[in-house]
Length: 172
Image 1 (cartoon, rainbow, N blue to C red):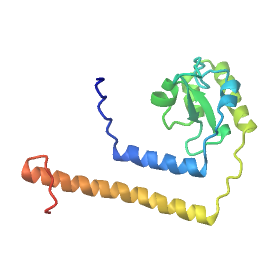
Image 2: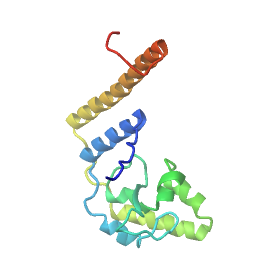
Image 3: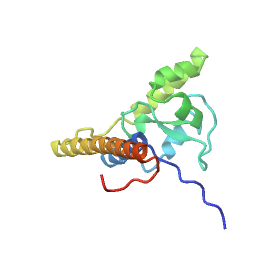
Image 4: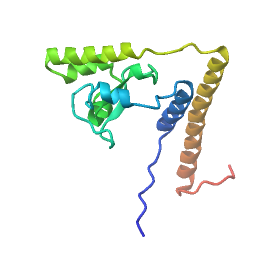
C-alpha cells in the first residue's frame, strides 16, 4: 500500500483567493486553447526567455496585469521562477526591466508583450448591473467567511488556553 501524502493545509487568505479565482473564471473565463500563446512566444518565458515544455508543468500562463482579466491579451508565458517567486504582483514592465539587464533585449521583450496584447484585446468588458450586484454580494460573502474564520480562531484559541487541551466542545 502506498503511503498517502499529508494533506496540505489551506490558509484563510489562500481560500479567499481560490474563491475569487473561481468567481473570476465565471465572469471572465480563461481561454480554452492556449496554443496561440505558446506559438507566439515560441515556447519561451516572456520575461527571461527560458525554454518551456508544453507537455509538462514547466511553463505557466501568467497574468501580465493583475486584475487585467483572463483574455489572451493579458496572458503571457512564464517559467515557474518568473511567475512565482520573482514577479509576484509587481507590474510586468518593472519586473522585465529588473530581470533582463540588457536594455536592447528588455525592449525587444517588452515590445513583443505589447504586440501580443494589442493582437488580443479584451472583448465585451461591460457588465450588467445584475452581474455587478451579484459580484458585490459574493465579495461580501468572502469577507464574511474571513471574519467568521477569525471569530472561530478566537473561540478555539480561548478554549485551548482555558482547558489546555486540543478539545473544543459545544458547551460555550
